Image (cartoon, rainbow over all chains, first blue to last red; front, top):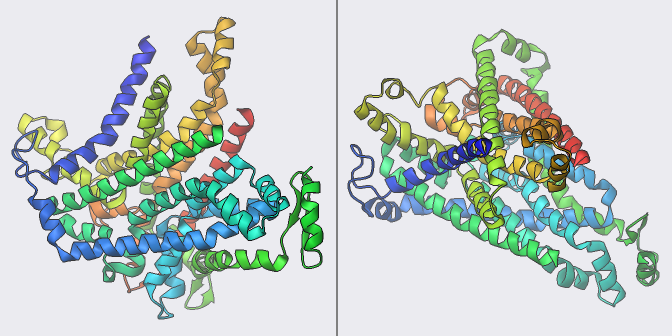
Length: 261
Length: 305
């Protein structure tokens, strides 16, 4: 019994530690005056209002959404077919995709940035496109996981064979049978990728710099100028992440439920 | 059965098709050209934005004005400032990974006793906070513990001596932030490892007269050990490669490997590309070793479970 309460203490510590900074920052975004008391003296909407009236923020938000969703869409169009071809038709080469996944996951932005700048800075091509390309590759682990899990759950080869035996063309079998089965896993993977890229700072800051101001770079600038505005930015960011996480959880749960039947 | 199923198609598409015979998966039908068309865009992107830059970085690290040399590596080994950066990064990564691992080991033990829906809620919360890293995370800690942070002011008001002398913009402050972003990752890695400990094992051990403590010491922890080692090395690599939060908090003033690399390549001025590449190669080697260790340990755990 004593041991149980000991572990519970660590659990409590864990939860408080990961929740407290989030809650404090969100509260700070609505605090009118908060420098002498435990809780803010008054609540206000003016920081969030100011933020949304700042065209620089709205543009930065647009750029972040554009860059992250652009990379996710390209990844879906390019990586997913490649995974399908490998998993369905050349399973013995799957270990190469897995090796690529581990490598991409192991090399952080700070290392990749050195190589990207070294190779592309002298060609005069847009460094934004270079970052976009690097983003597409960097989400390979999430896209692979999302696709692979669904494929493993349904024994995709057998489904395809059955569909083709019943007279479906390869294209029909793919769009009518395979795509709907992997769709939820892929959707969750895509949302996860989007939220990871939306929060990316290292590559965009080092490779492109402030010429292309995303939400993260906007936040970095506000850090030294206005604490309340910065916390309003973080508030918006957390809300967005919260919505995405919630949808991912719902979709994943549904997938699990469906395949257990 | 599957082979028979695949046969009609095989005959109707004969000639243009490429067959591969797989023992379990039936006969596979796809032309080589078709496969190549679907694979090539991915391979091109992988080359352009991953393999070529990393390879070029490796080559650059052995260069000085275009000639082959080991000079960059000699510079690193004789430069106490860069070496200190490595030392600081390794210490910070080891300590933060260790703290997160210990806290999470106990926390997951407690979580396992909750009901299924409750556990799911905790996992969702953890997933949410795993996105909370980099600049927003550094800022959140500034709000709490910065120069005019909420707790800083409270500690001053209550005159808690030791706590009010705490500075967020130091090693201790960075440690708090690093532990923060390690916790969700540690939970997500340890949870499935705990989950693999079967209830039957506990019951069997209990029937044979083992106490809970004895079960964990003799069975539970030995079974999980490779997984725990693997988790530790992933956490270590995670911290070694982190850049944004330290950059946001100390504005490049605290000496870490990632910060060193960043300041050597920042913006358009590419001051010492060869040196930056050599440091990045050494960092990459450290991380690849850590990841290989974790892959190996996790594979070992899977065999046991």
